[in-house]
Amino acid sequence: MRKAFKENVGFGPGEVRTLKAELRLTAPRPCVVSGGEKQKRKRDRKPGSDFFGFFLRHQWSLSTTSHCSIRARRSTTAATDQKTKMETISLPSTLPSPLQQVHLAHFSNLDPESQSAAIIRRIISASQLPTSTASGASEEKIQQADLERSKLDFAFLDPTKLCSKQHVLTAVTQAAVVCARSWDNETRAFREGEGSIGGMKSKTPHSEVIYMLNPGNNVGESLKRFGLSPKSTSLLLVKFSSPASDPQAVLQSMIDVVSATNLTTPPTTEANYPIDIDQTIRYGSYSATPSTTTPVTDWKDLNKIYKLQIPSNLLNNKEDSRWQKEYEDIVCTSVAMKLVAG
Image 1 (cartoon, rainbow, N blue to C red):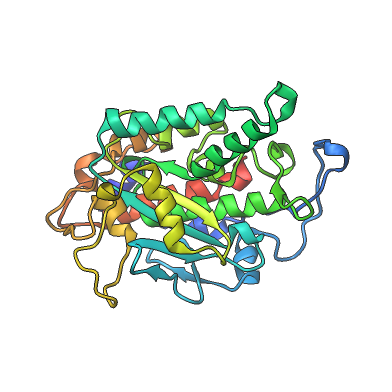
Image 2: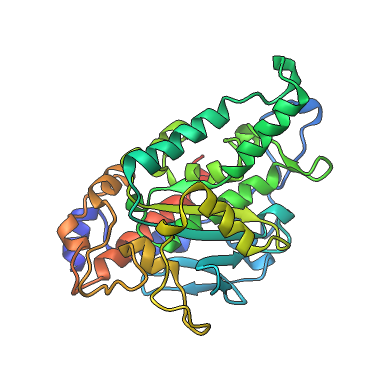
């Protein structure tokens, strides 16, 4: 398998291990640019300012897989809200309050025209609404526009372009690091368009998650590749929030955008039933059995996006998941490297 892996990917698992062991992602300190000017400048790198130091400073534990891929987990296990059928994960308390929690909910069996395409049209329409009275709109119109945009403030992800929950959480973590640099504590808002100085390149933390998934530097391209499309039949919604947010209210806001009948739920509602959305992202169902179910991931498209050449038949092998594991390690490393490559 190792020989075949090297032939298809271009380097062997041992070299993947070396790459990841040497990988250090620089995380520049947050900065405030006076007068709204965006200046490129070099910032001193303090000890512990690299990617791994970030996790250590924020009480994350690092575990190592058989191929030394780095996985970040909070020292206290991520909480899962059994009542809401949604996974809620706590992020470091030293991040700005709006980034200290992230919620993941999966929706399936969407009708492309009446649901997926309709949601996209609503998002586009909301983006075209006035943002200030300078455009001639009344204060009431601005408030209504802001309310509509807030109702759609999620990362809309197409699960067929994801290989696992870890794939998503790697992008979430990277987005949180970047957005923390663009947080203005006085105005309690994120400053957009600070990509040149290490801050947000897109407009919101949620669009930053989608941007982080894409190996390129084009925000529009990332939305086309990983965002909801008019042909999508499933959807993963990602939502940042403060620790004070009510998970049930967050889920209800997601349902209001999609539909309660499309919410993917576990086969039982027992309090001790462990909900792990990874199963749903991979197979489209909480009750799917890996040994008998083919992943929903579009490996052909994902190979093209990440410039890999691993045959789909190997990744869909129900009896051997090692290829999926190797694939996940490479893809997550690619996402993690974006803070350096960008």
